[in-house]
Amino acid sequence: MAEDSPDREDEEEEEEDELAESTQHSVLPNSQELFLTQTELPSQASSPDTEAVEATSSANFSSLPPPSQRLSQIRRWGEKKTREEMFSEITKVTRKERAHLNEWKDVVAKCRKDASDREDRRDQGNCFVPASEIIAVEETEIDEKQRSSGKWQKMAKPHAFTVYYVKRAQKHRWRCSEVTFWCVDEQLCNQWIQALKELLELQITEHANHAKDNLFEVNIYKYDGIVCVGGDGMFSEVMHGLIGRIQKDSGIDQNNPKAPLVQCNMRIGIIPAGSTDCICYATVGVTDPVTSALHIIVGDSQPLDVSSIHHNNTFLKYSVSLLGYGFYGDILKDSEKKRWMGTIRYDFSGFKTFLSHHYYEGAVSFLLAKHTLGSPRDKKRCRTGCLICRQSKQQPEEPQKKYGLEHNEDEGGEDWKVIKGKFLAINAVNMSCACPRSPKGLSPAAHLADGSIDLILVRKCSRFNFLRYLVRHTNQDDQFDFTFVEVYRVKKFQFTSKHLEDSDNDVKDIGKKHFGQFCRDHPACCCNLSNSIWNCDGETLDSSTIEVRVHCQLMKLFARGIEENSNDEAIYNQSTVEQLL
Image 1 (tube, rainbow, N blue to C red):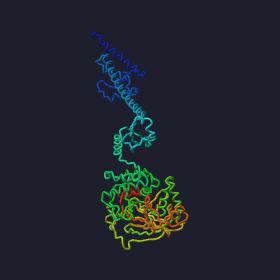
Image 2: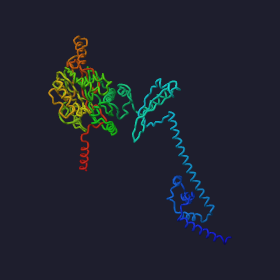
Image 3: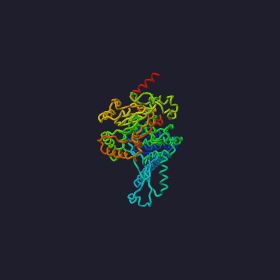
Image 4: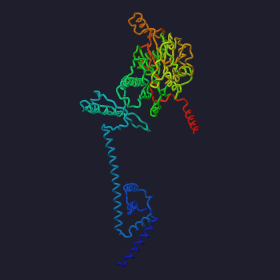
Protein backbone atom coordinates (compact mmCIF):
# COMPACT_ATOMS: atom_id res chain seq x y z
CA MET A 1 0.00 0.00 0.00
CA ALA A 2 2.90 2.31 0.69
CA GLU A 3 4.20 1.69 -2.78
CA ASP A 4 0.89 2.58 -4.41
CA SER A 5 0.52 5.93 -2.73
CA PRO A 6 2.88 7.84 -5.05
CA ASP A 7 1.01 6.45 -8.02
CA ARG A 8 -2.33 7.54 -6.57
CA GLU A 9 -1.02 11.05 -6.02
CA ASP A 10 0.18 11.18 -9.63
CA GLU A 11 -3.23 9.98 -10.81
CA GLU A 12 -4.98 12.63 -8.73
CA GLU A 13 -2.74 15.37 -10.14
CA GLU A 14 -3.46 14.18 -13.69
CA GLU A 15 -7.22 14.26 -13.00
CA GLU A 16 -6.97 17.79 -11.63
CA ASP A 17 -4.97 18.93 -14.66
CA GLU A 18 -7.55 17.42 -17.01
CA LEU A 19 -10.34 19.10 -15.06
CA ALA A 20 -8.54 22.42 -15.20
CA GLU A 21 -8.07 22.16 -19.00
CA SER A 22 -11.71 21.26 -19.47
CA THR A 23 -13.01 24.19 -17.37
CA GLN A 24 -11.01 26.85 -19.24
CA HIS A 25 -13.58 26.80 -22.05
CA SER A 26 -16.74 25.98 -20.06
CA VAL A 27 -19.45 28.11 -18.47
CA LEU A 28 -18.71 29.43 -14.96
CA PRO A 29 -19.86 26.73 -12.54
CA ASN A 30 -22.87 27.55 -10.45
CA SER A 31 -20.94 26.96 -7.24
CA GLN A 32 -21.27 29.15 -4.18
CA GLU A 33 -18.10 27.61 -2.75
CA LEU A 34 -16.09 28.85 -5.74
CA PHE A 35 -17.12 32.46 -5.16
CA LEU A 36 -16.69 32.46 -1.41
CA THR A 37 -13.32 30.81 -1.38
CA GLN A 38 -11.85 33.44 -3.67
CA THR A 39 -12.74 36.22 -1.25
CA GLU A 40 -10.49 35.18 1.57
CA LEU A 41 -7.21 33.32 1.44
CA PRO A 42 -6.43 31.07 4.38
CA SER A 43 -3.11 32.82 4.85
CA GLN A 44 -4.71 36.27 5.17
CA ALA A 45 -6.78 37.72 8.02
CA SER A 46 -10.28 38.84 7.08
CA SER A 47 -12.03 41.97 8.31
CA PRO A 48 -15.75 42.79 8.72
CA ASP A 49 -15.49 45.50 6.10
CA THR A 50 -14.07 43.25 3.42
CA GLU A 51 -16.48 40.52 4.34
CA ALA A 52 -19.44 42.88 4.02
CA VAL A 53 -18.26 44.08 0.62
CA GLU A 54 -17.73 40.54 -0.57
CA ALA A 55 -21.14 39.43 0.70
CA THR A 56 -22.95 42.20 -1.13
CA SER A 57 -21.10 41.61 -4.41
CA SER A 58 -21.95 37.96 -4.88
CA ALA A 59 -23.34 38.64 -8.33
CA ASN A 60 -20.16 40.30 -9.64
CA PHE A 61 -18.56 37.27 -11.31
CA SER A 62 -16.38 39.41 -13.58
CA SER A 63 -13.91 39.94 -10.70
CA LEU A 64 -13.35 36.17 -10.19
CA PRO A 65 -10.10 34.53 -11.40
CA PRO A 66 -10.27 31.88 -14.13
CA PRO A 67 -11.23 28.41 -12.91
CA SER A 68 -7.85 26.96 -13.83
CA GLN A 69 -6.05 29.54 -11.71
CA ARG A 70 -8.48 28.95 -8.85
CA LEU A 71 -7.91 25.19 -8.95
CA SER A 72 -4.18 25.76 -8.97
CA GLN A 73 -4.51 27.86 -5.82
CA ILE A 74 -6.58 25.15 -4.17
CA ARG A 75 -3.98 22.57 -5.18
CA ARG A 76 -1.20 24.62 -3.61
CA TRP A 77 -3.14 25.05 -0.37
CA GLY A 78 -3.92 21.35 -0.17
CA GLU A 79 -0.48 19.87 -0.86
CA LYS A 80 -0.47 18.54 2.70
CA LYS A 81 -4.24 18.45 3.24
CA THR A 82 -6.82 15.87 2.45
CA ARG A 83 -9.95 16.57 0.45
CA GLU A 84 -12.01 16.41 3.65
CA GLU A 85 -9.95 19.17 5.29
CA MET A 86 -10.25 21.40 2.23
CA PHE A 87 -14.01 20.90 2.05
CA SER A 88 -14.31 21.64 5.78
CA GLU A 89 -12.39 24.91 5.38
CA ILE A 90 -14.49 26.00 2.43
CA THR A 91 -17.69 25.23 4.32
CA LYS A 92 -16.46 27.22 7.34
CA VAL A 93 -15.82 30.33 5.25
CA THR A 94 -19.21 29.98 3.58
CA ARG A 95 -21.02 29.87 6.89
CA LYS A 96 -19.14 32.95 8.11
CA GLU A 97 -20.06 34.98 5.04
CA ARG A 98 -23.68 33.92 5.28
CA ALA A 99 -23.76 34.94 8.95
CA HIS A 100 -22.53 38.46 8.09
CA LEU A 101 -25.08 38.70 5.30
CA ASN A 102 -27.88 37.74 7.69
CA GLU A 103 -26.68 40.34 10.21
CA TRP A 104 -26.81 43.04 7.53
CA LYS A 105 -30.32 41.98 6.58
CA ASP A 106 -31.35 42.26 10.23
CA VAL A 107 -29.97 45.81 10.44
CA VAL A 108 -31.84 46.87 7.31
CA ALA A 109 -35.06 45.31 8.56
CA LYS A 110 -34.71 47.08 11.91
CA CYS A 111 -34.20 50.47 10.22
CA ARG A 112 -37.24 49.95 8.07
CA LYS A 113 -39.29 48.97 11.09
CA ASP A 114 -38.20 52.11 12.99
CA ALA A 115 -39.14 54.32 10.03
CA SER A 116 -42.49 52.61 9.80
CA ASP A 117 -43.07 53.14 13.53
CA ARG A 118 -42.31 56.85 13.20
CA GLU A 119 -44.80 57.15 10.35
CA ASP A 120 -47.41 55.35 12.44
CA ARG A 121 -46.85 57.67 15.40
CA ARG A 122 -47.07 60.69 13.13
CA ASP A 123 -50.34 59.41 11.72
CA GLN A 124 -51.61 59.03 15.28
CA GLY A 125 -51.02 62.77 15.98
CA ASN A 126 -47.38 62.79 17.11
CA CYS A 127 -44.92 65.10 15.36
CA PHE A 128 -41.17 65.51 15.53
CA VAL A 129 -39.69 68.95 14.74
CA PRO A 130 -35.89 69.57 14.80
CA ALA A 131 -35.08 72.49 17.07
CA SER A 132 -32.66 73.88 14.47
CA GLU A 133 -35.54 74.39 12.00
CA ILE A 134 -38.00 76.12 14.33
CA ILE A 135 -38.83 79.66 13.23
CA ALA A 136 -41.20 80.88 15.92
CA VAL A 137 -43.35 79.74 18.82
CA GLU A 138 -46.43 81.26 20.38
CA GLU A 139 -49.11 80.32 22.88
CA THR A 140 -52.33 79.04 21.36
CA GLU A 141 -55.82 79.69 22.63
CA ILE A 142 -58.20 76.70 22.44
CA ASP A 143 -61.76 77.70 21.74
CA GLU A 144 -64.89 75.78 22.69
CA LYS A 145 -65.25 74.25 19.24
CA GLN A 146 -61.76 72.75 19.36
CA ARG A 147 -62.21 71.59 22.94
CA SER A 148 -65.32 69.61 22.05
CA SER A 149 -63.68 67.76 19.18
CA GLY A 150 -61.19 64.93 18.93
CA LYS A 151 -58.26 64.72 21.29
CA TRP A 152 -59.29 67.78 23.28
CA GLN A 153 -62.36 66.00 24.71
CA LYS A 154 -60.30 63.92 27.15
CA MET A 155 -58.62 66.99 28.64
CA ALA A 156 -60.30 69.01 31.39
CA LYS A 157 -58.44 72.24 30.61
CA PRO A 158 -55.96 71.79 27.76
CA HIS A 159 -53.04 74.17 27.17
CA ALA A 160 -51.27 74.42 23.85
CA PHE A 161 -48.55 76.23 21.93
CA THR A 162 -47.92 76.42 18.20
CA VAL A 163 -44.49 75.90 16.65
CA TYR A 164 -43.69 77.32 13.19
CA TYR A 165 -40.95 75.42 11.41
CA VAL A 166 -39.28 74.86 8.04
CA LYS A 167 -40.89 72.26 5.80
CA ARG A 168 -39.23 70.90 2.68
CA ALA A 169 -41.16 71.24 -0.54
CA GLN A 170 -40.40 70.17 -4.09
CA LYS A 171 -37.31 71.26 -6.01
CA HIS A 172 -35.31 72.39 -2.96
CA ARG A 173 -37.98 74.90 -1.93
CA TRP A 174 -38.67 75.68 1.70
CA ARG A 175 -42.05 76.54 3.11
CA CYS A 176 -43.31 77.50 6.53
CA SER A 177 -45.46 74.97 8.34
CA GLU A 178 -46.92 74.79 11.81
CA VAL A 179 -47.87 72.22 14.42
CA THR A 180 -49.68 72.63 17.73
CA PHE A 181 -48.52 70.79 20.86
CA TRP A 182 -50.87 70.44 23.82
CA CYS A 183 -50.85 69.18 27.38
CA VAL A 184 -52.86 69.38 30.59
CA ASP A 185 -50.17 70.99 32.75
CA GLU A 186 -50.17 74.76 32.23
CA GLN A 187 -46.78 75.18 33.92
CA LEU A 188 -45.19 72.60 31.64
CA CYS A 189 -46.67 74.32 28.60
CA ASN A 190 -45.26 77.69 29.69
CA GLN A 191 -41.86 76.14 30.34
CA TRP A 192 -41.74 74.80 26.80
CA ILE A 193 -42.74 78.17 25.36
CA GLN A 194 -40.12 80.01 27.39
CA ALA A 195 -37.39 77.50 26.55
CA LEU A 196 -38.10 77.69 22.83
CA LYS A 197 -38.20 81.49 22.86
CA GLU A 198 -34.83 81.61 24.61
CA LEU A 199 -33.48 79.20 22.03
CA LEU A 200 -34.82 81.20 19.11
CA GLU A 201 -34.12 84.74 20.38
CA LEU A 202 -37.17 85.68 18.33
CA GLN A 203 -40.11 87.90 19.22
CA ILE A 204 -43.37 88.00 17.29
CA THR A 205 -45.15 91.31 17.84
CA GLU A 206 -48.77 90.97 18.87
CA HIS A 207 -49.89 94.59 19.26
CA ALA A 208 -48.80 98.16 18.60
CA ASN A 209 -45.50 99.19 20.24
CA HIS A 210 -44.83 95.58 21.26
CA ALA A 211 -41.35 95.68 19.74
CA LYS A 212 -40.60 99.01 21.40
CA ASP A 213 -41.73 97.84 24.83
CA ASN A 214 -39.81 94.58 24.53
CA LEU A 215 -36.52 96.40 23.88
CA PHE A 216 -36.91 98.21 27.19
CA GLU A 217 -37.18 94.88 29.03
CA VAL A 218 -34.63 92.50 27.48
CA ASN A 219 -30.84 92.63 27.79
CA ILE A 220 -30.00 94.22 24.44
CA TYR A 221 -26.27 94.42 25.11
CA LYS A 222 -25.71 90.72 24.46
CA TYR A 223 -26.77 91.13 20.82
CA ASP A 224 -24.82 92.38 17.81
CA GLY A 225 -27.92 93.74 16.15
CA ILE A 226 -31.69 93.63 15.81
CA VAL A 227 -33.46 92.39 12.68
CA CYS A 228 -37.08 93.32 12.01
CA VAL A 229 -39.39 91.94 9.34
CA GLY A 230 -42.01 94.44 8.22
CA GLY A 231 -42.44 97.90 6.81
CA ASP A 232 -41.49 101.41 7.86
CA GLY A 233 -43.85 101.24 10.85
CA MET A 234 -42.12 98.16 12.29
CA PHE A 235 -38.71 99.77 11.79
CA SER A 236 -39.94 102.90 13.57
CA GLU A 237 -40.99 100.83 16.59
CA VAL A 238 -37.60 99.11 16.80
CA MET A 239 -35.77 102.40 16.33
CA HIS A 240 -37.73 104.15 19.09
CA GLY A 241 -37.19 101.21 21.43
CA LEU A 242 -33.47 101.01 20.78
CA ILE A 243 -32.74 104.75 20.96
CA GLY A 244 -34.99 105.17 23.98
CA ARG A 245 -33.31 102.29 25.79
CA ILE A 246 -29.81 103.64 25.12
CA GLN A 247 -30.76 107.13 26.34
CA LYS A 248 -32.46 105.72 29.43
CA ASP A 249 -29.43 103.63 30.37
CA SER A 250 -27.18 106.65 29.74
CA GLY A 251 -29.24 108.98 31.92
CA ILE A 252 -30.30 111.25 29.05
CA ASP A 253 -33.58 113.12 29.36
CA GLN A 254 -35.32 112.77 25.99
CA ASN A 255 -37.81 115.51 26.89
CA ASN A 256 -35.02 118.07 26.80
CA PRO A 257 -34.80 119.25 23.15
CA LYS A 258 -31.24 120.50 23.70
CA ALA A 259 -29.95 117.31 25.32
CA PRO A 260 -27.16 115.57 23.38
CA LEU A 261 -28.13 112.00 22.54
CA VAL A 262 -25.81 109.02 22.87
CA GLN A 263 -25.05 107.13 19.68
CA CYS A 264 -26.47 103.62 19.23
CA ASN A 265 -23.72 101.26 18.10
CA MET A 266 -26.10 98.34 17.73
CA ARG A 267 -27.25 97.96 14.13
CA ILE A 268 -30.80 97.41 12.90
CA GLY A 269 -31.54 95.15 9.95
CA ILE A 270 -34.68 95.52 7.83
CA ILE A 271 -36.27 92.66 5.90
CA PRO A 272 -38.80 94.63 3.79
CA ALA A 273 -42.37 93.34 4.03
CA GLY A 274 -44.45 96.54 4.04
CA SER A 275 -46.47 98.53 1.55
CA THR A 276 -43.88 101.25 0.80
CA ASP A 277 -40.58 100.25 2.48
CA CYS A 278 -39.20 103.73 1.88
CA ILE A 279 -36.33 103.40 4.37
CA CYS A 280 -35.11 100.14 2.87
CA TYR A 281 -35.35 101.50 -0.67
CA ALA A 282 -33.46 104.70 0.20
CA THR A 283 -30.64 102.86 2.00
CA VAL A 284 -30.25 99.76 -0.21
CA GLY A 285 -31.71 100.82 -3.54
CA VAL A 286 -34.26 98.02 -3.79
CA THR A 287 -36.97 96.42 -1.67
CA ASP A 288 -35.75 92.85 -2.12
CA PRO A 289 -35.84 90.67 1.03
CA VAL A 290 -32.99 88.45 -0.18
CA THR A 291 -30.72 91.44 -0.82
CA SER A 292 -31.46 92.86 2.61
CA ALA A 293 -30.85 89.48 4.25
CA LEU A 294 -27.47 89.20 2.52
CA HIS A 295 -26.48 92.67 3.75
CA ILE A 296 -27.27 91.47 7.27
CA ILE A 297 -25.30 88.23 6.82
CA VAL A 298 -22.28 90.07 5.42
CA GLY A 299 -22.47 92.53 8.34
CA ASP A 300 -22.59 95.82 6.44
CA SER A 301 -22.92 99.05 8.40
CA GLN A 302 -24.54 102.30 7.27
CA PRO A 303 -24.79 105.27 9.67
CA LEU A 304 -28.04 107.19 9.67
CA ASP A 305 -29.15 110.62 10.87
CA VAL A 306 -32.13 110.80 13.21
CA SER A 307 -34.31 113.83 13.93
CA SER A 308 -35.90 114.36 17.34
CA ILE A 309 -39.28 116.13 17.53
CA HIS A 310 -40.47 118.06 20.59
CA HIS A 311 -43.46 120.14 21.55
CA ASN A 312 -43.34 122.42 24.60
CA ASN A 313 -40.28 120.61 26.01
CA THR A 314 -41.98 117.24 25.60
CA PHE A 315 -40.53 114.53 23.40
CA LEU A 316 -42.89 113.32 20.68
CA LYS A 317 -41.10 111.08 18.18
CA TYR A 318 -37.98 110.35 16.18
CA SER A 319 -37.90 110.59 12.39
CA VAL A 320 -35.48 109.21 9.80
CA SER A 321 -37.33 109.75 6.52
CA LEU A 322 -40.30 112.12 6.01
CA LEU A 323 -41.75 114.70 8.35
CA GLY A 324 -44.59 116.28 6.39
CA TYR A 325 -47.19 118.90 7.24
CA GLY A 326 -50.09 119.94 5.04
CA PHE A 327 -50.48 117.77 1.95
CA TYR A 328 -48.79 114.59 3.25
CA GLY A 329 -50.26 115.06 6.71
CA ASP A 330 -53.78 115.32 5.30
CA ILE A 331 -53.25 112.19 3.17
CA LEU A 332 -52.21 110.19 6.20
CA LYS A 333 -55.06 111.51 8.34
CA ASP A 334 -57.67 110.61 5.74
CA SER A 335 -56.14 107.20 4.91
CA GLU A 336 -56.18 106.13 8.56
CA LYS A 337 -59.98 106.26 8.40
CA LYS A 338 -60.01 103.93 5.38
CA ARG A 339 -57.79 101.06 6.44
CA TRP A 340 -60.47 98.67 5.23
CA MET A 341 -59.50 99.64 1.68
CA GLY A 342 -56.01 98.21 1.98
CA THR A 343 -53.04 99.84 0.25
CA ILE A 344 -55.28 101.49 -2.34
CA ARG A 345 -56.42 103.88 0.38
CA TYR A 346 -53.26 105.94 -0.15
CA ASP A 347 -54.14 106.57 -3.79
CA PHE A 348 -57.73 107.43 -2.93
CA SER A 349 -56.76 109.76 -0.06
CA GLY A 350 -54.05 111.36 -2.17
CA PHE A 351 -56.46 112.16 -4.96
CA LYS A 352 -59.02 113.49 -2.49
CA THR A 353 -56.43 115.67 -0.73
CA PHE A 354 -55.19 117.04 -4.04
CA LEU A 355 -58.72 118.11 -4.98
CA SER A 356 -59.30 119.73 -1.58
CA HIS A 357 -56.20 121.91 -2.10
CA HIS A 358 -56.00 123.12 1.51
CA TYR A 359 -53.28 125.52 2.60
CA TYR A 360 -52.08 126.40 6.10
CA GLU A 361 -50.67 129.60 7.54
CA GLY A 362 -47.69 129.62 9.85
CA ALA A 363 -44.07 130.58 10.43
CA VAL A 364 -41.01 128.42 9.83
CA SER A 365 -37.74 129.34 11.55
CA PHE A 366 -34.58 127.35 10.84
CA LEU A 367 -30.84 127.24 11.36
CA LEU A 368 -28.81 126.53 8.22
CA ALA A 369 -26.40 123.59 8.26
CA LYS A 370 -23.18 125.42 7.45
CA HIS A 371 -21.00 122.46 8.36
CA THR A 372 -22.24 120.28 5.50
CA LEU A 373 -20.92 120.19 1.96
CA GLY A 374 -23.17 120.55 -1.07
CA SER A 375 -26.75 121.72 -1.34
CA PRO A 376 -30.18 120.23 -2.09
CA ARG A 377 -29.98 121.55 -5.66
CA ASP A 378 -26.72 119.88 -6.66
CA LYS A 379 -26.37 116.52 -8.43
CA LYS A 380 -24.28 114.79 -5.77
CA ARG A 381 -26.30 111.79 -4.72
CA CYS A 382 -25.63 109.89 -1.51
CA ARG A 383 -24.05 106.57 -2.47
CA THR A 384 -21.93 103.86 -0.87
CA GLY A 385 -18.95 105.40 0.93
CA CYS A 386 -20.36 108.93 0.50
CA LEU A 387 -17.58 111.53 0.86
CA ILE A 388 -19.99 114.24 2.05
CA CYS A 389 -21.26 112.05 4.89
CA ARG A 390 -17.71 111.14 5.96
CA GLN A 391 -16.50 114.73 5.91
CA SER A 392 -19.59 116.02 7.73
CA LYS A 393 -18.78 113.61 10.52
CA GLN A 394 -15.28 115.04 10.91
CA GLN A 395 -16.09 118.76 10.94
CA PRO A 396 -14.09 120.53 13.68
CA GLU A 397 -17.00 122.84 14.54
CA GLU A 398 -18.83 119.78 15.94
CA PRO A 399 -16.26 117.98 18.10
CA GLN A 400 -18.91 115.89 19.87
CA LYS A 401 -20.09 114.24 16.67
CA LYS A 402 -17.98 111.14 17.37
CA TYR A 403 -20.44 110.37 20.17
CA GLY A 404 -23.41 110.99 17.93
CA LEU A 405 -24.08 114.36 19.60
CA GLU A 406 -25.07 117.67 18.21
CA HIS A 407 -22.92 120.73 18.88
CA ASN A 408 -24.91 123.31 20.85
CA GLU A 409 -24.51 126.58 18.98
CA ASP A 410 -25.84 129.92 20.01
CA GLU A 411 -29.42 129.84 18.78
CA GLY A 412 -29.86 133.59 18.84
CA GLY A 413 -28.69 136.27 16.44
CA GLU A 414 -28.67 136.23 12.69
CA ASP A 415 -28.16 132.48 12.31
CA TRP A 416 -31.88 131.83 12.48
CA LYS A 417 -34.00 132.57 9.43
CA VAL A 418 -37.78 133.01 9.63
CA ILE A 419 -40.26 132.53 6.76
CA LYS A 420 -43.97 133.26 7.15
CA GLY A 421 -46.72 132.52 4.67
CA LYS A 422 -49.40 130.18 3.40
CA PHE A 423 -48.14 126.69 2.65
CA LEU A 424 -49.62 123.74 0.80
CA ALA A 425 -46.91 121.48 2.15
CA ILE A 426 -43.96 121.65 4.53
CA ASN A 427 -41.64 118.66 4.19
CA ALA A 428 -38.47 117.84 6.12
CA VAL A 429 -36.48 114.79 4.95
CA ASN A 430 -33.39 113.09 6.36
CA MET A 431 -32.97 111.03 3.20
CA SER A 432 -34.15 111.13 -0.40
CA CYS A 433 -37.39 109.28 0.53
CA ALA A 434 -37.17 107.41 -2.75
CA CYS A 435 -39.52 104.51 -3.39
CA PRO A 436 -40.54 102.42 -6.43
CA ARG A 437 -43.22 104.98 -7.33
CA SER A 438 -40.85 107.91 -6.93
CA PRO A 439 -37.32 106.69 -7.77
CA LYS A 440 -35.78 110.13 -7.07
CA GLY A 441 -37.77 110.82 -3.92
CA LEU A 442 -38.73 114.17 -2.40
CA SER A 443 -35.13 115.40 -2.26
CA PRO A 444 -32.81 113.45 -4.61
CA ALA A 445 -29.60 115.00 -3.22
CA ALA A 446 -30.40 114.42 0.48
CA HIS A 447 -27.74 112.49 2.39
CA LEU A 448 -28.14 109.70 4.89
CA ALA A 449 -25.52 110.75 7.42
CA ASP A 450 -24.41 114.36 6.92
CA GLY A 451 -26.12 115.77 10.01
CA SER A 452 -28.68 117.87 8.15
CA ILE A 453 -32.30 117.97 7.00
CA ASP A 454 -33.60 119.15 3.65
CA LEU A 455 -36.48 121.51 4.45
CA ILE A 456 -38.91 121.90 1.51
CA LEU A 457 -41.51 124.69 1.59
CA VAL A 458 -44.31 124.60 -0.99
CA ARG A 459 -46.22 127.86 -0.92
CA LYS A 460 -49.83 128.34 -1.95
CA CYS A 461 -50.28 128.00 -5.71
CA SER A 462 -52.83 126.80 -8.25
CA ARG A 463 -53.84 123.19 -8.50
CA PHE A 464 -52.22 122.96 -11.92
CA ASN A 465 -48.84 124.19 -10.67
CA PHE A 466 -49.02 121.92 -7.65
CA LEU A 467 -49.76 119.00 -9.96
CA ARG A 468 -46.68 119.90 -12.04
CA TYR A 469 -44.64 119.83 -8.87
CA LEU A 470 -45.96 116.41 -7.86
CA VAL A 471 -45.39 114.93 -11.34
CA ARG A 472 -41.72 115.90 -11.22
CA HIS A 473 -41.22 113.43 -8.39
CA THR A 474 -41.61 110.68 -10.98
CA ASN A 475 -39.35 112.02 -13.77
CA GLN A 476 -35.87 113.46 -14.20
CA ASP A 477 -36.83 117.15 -14.12
CA ASP A 478 -35.73 119.43 -11.28
CA GLN A 479 -38.62 119.37 -8.83
CA PHE A 480 -37.37 122.48 -7.05
CA ASP A 481 -37.37 124.64 -10.18
CA PHE A 482 -40.57 126.51 -9.31
CA THR A 483 -41.10 129.99 -7.91
CA PHE A 484 -43.43 128.65 -5.20
CA VAL A 485 -40.97 125.97 -3.97
CA GLU A 486 -38.06 126.71 -1.62
CA VAL A 487 -35.56 124.21 -0.23
CA TYR A 488 -32.94 124.66 2.49
CA ARG A 489 -30.42 122.34 4.12
CA VAL A 490 -30.81 122.91 7.87
CA LYS A 491 -29.83 121.33 11.17
CA LYS A 492 -32.76 122.64 13.25
CA PHE A 493 -36.13 124.14 12.52
CA GLN A 494 -39.34 125.13 14.24
CA PHE A 495 -42.86 125.55 12.95
CA THR A 496 -45.58 127.60 14.58
CA SER A 497 -49.12 127.51 13.28
CA LYS A 498 -50.99 130.80 13.03
CA HIS A 499 -53.94 129.26 14.88
CA LEU A 500 -53.22 128.14 18.42
CA GLU A 501 -54.24 124.57 19.30
CA ASP A 502 -55.30 125.32 22.86
CA SER A 503 -58.06 127.81 21.99
CA ASP A 504 -61.09 125.51 22.03
CA ASN A 505 -62.76 127.74 24.61
CA ASP A 506 -62.69 130.74 22.31
CA VAL A 507 -66.00 131.12 20.46
CA LYS A 508 -64.32 132.28 17.29
CA ASP A 509 -61.93 129.38 17.24
CA ILE A 510 -64.82 126.99 17.83
CA GLY A 511 -66.55 128.49 14.84
CA LYS A 512 -63.42 128.09 12.74
CA LYS A 513 -63.11 124.51 13.91
CA HIS A 514 -66.64 123.66 12.77
CA PHE A 515 -66.11 125.54 9.53
CA GLY A 516 -62.94 123.56 8.95
CA GLN A 517 -64.83 120.33 9.46
CA PHE A 518 -67.38 121.46 6.89
CA CYS A 519 -64.54 122.09 4.45
CA ARG A 520 -63.13 118.63 5.03
CA ASP A 521 -66.51 117.20 4.11
CA HIS A 522 -66.60 119.42 1.00
CA PRO A 523 -63.03 119.52 -0.33
CA ALA A 524 -63.86 121.62 -3.38
CA CYS A 525 -64.34 124.73 -1.27
CA CYS A 526 -60.56 125.29 -1.20
CA CYS A 527 -60.51 127.25 2.05
CA ASN A 528 -57.90 127.79 4.72
CA LEU A 529 -58.14 125.30 7.57
CA SER A 530 -56.80 126.03 11.02
CA ASN A 531 -54.34 123.16 11.42
CA SER A 532 -53.12 120.08 9.66
CA ILE A 533 -51.21 117.21 11.28
CA TRP A 534 -47.63 116.03 10.89
CA ASN A 535 -46.85 112.85 9.00
CA CYS A 536 -43.85 111.41 10.89
CA ASP A 537 -42.55 108.36 8.98
CA GLY A 538 -46.11 107.23 8.36
CA GLU A 539 -47.33 107.96 11.90
CA THR A 540 -49.51 110.90 12.90
CA LEU A 541 -48.48 113.77 15.17
CA ASP A 542 -51.41 115.86 16.32
CA SER A 543 -49.29 118.76 17.59
CA SER A 544 -48.84 121.26 14.79
CA THR A 545 -46.29 123.45 16.62
CA ILE A 546 -43.05 121.48 16.87
CA GLU A 547 -39.30 121.83 17.26
CA VAL A 548 -37.05 119.54 15.20
CA ARG A 549 -33.35 118.84 15.62
CA VAL A 550 -31.15 116.43 13.67
CA HIS A 551 -28.61 114.17 15.41
CA CYS A 552 -25.75 113.20 13.13
CA GLN A 553 -25.27 109.44 12.66
CA LEU A 554 -27.20 108.58 15.78
CA MET A 555 -27.83 104.99 14.67
CA LYS A 556 -26.62 102.37 12.20
CA LEU A 557 -28.27 99.96 9.78
CA PHE A 558 -27.27 96.63 8.30
CA ALA A 559 -26.84 98.25 4.90
CA ARG A 560 -24.18 99.64 2.58
CA GLY A 561 -25.97 102.54 0.96
CA ILE A 562 -27.08 102.60 -2.66
CA GLU A 563 -24.40 101.27 -4.99
CA GLU A 564 -24.11 103.12 -8.28
CA ASN A 565 -22.73 101.28 -11.31
CA SER A 566 -21.53 98.47 -9.06
CA ASN A 567 -20.27 96.35 -11.98
CA ASP A 568 -18.20 99.16 -13.41
CA GLU A 569 -16.82 99.98 -9.96
CA ALA A 570 -15.85 96.36 -9.39
CA ILE A 571 -14.00 96.24 -12.71
CA TYR A 572 -12.31 99.55 -11.93
CA ASN A 573 -11.26 98.43 -8.46
CA GLN A 574 -9.89 95.16 -9.82
CA SER A 575 -7.85 96.92 -12.50
CA THR A 576 -6.53 99.39 -9.91
CA VAL A 577 -5.38 96.57 -7.67
CA GLU A 578 -3.67 94.86 -10.61
CA GLN A 579 -1.85 98.07 -11.46
CA LEU A 580 -0.66 98.43 -7.85
CA LEU A 581 0.61 94.85 -7.85
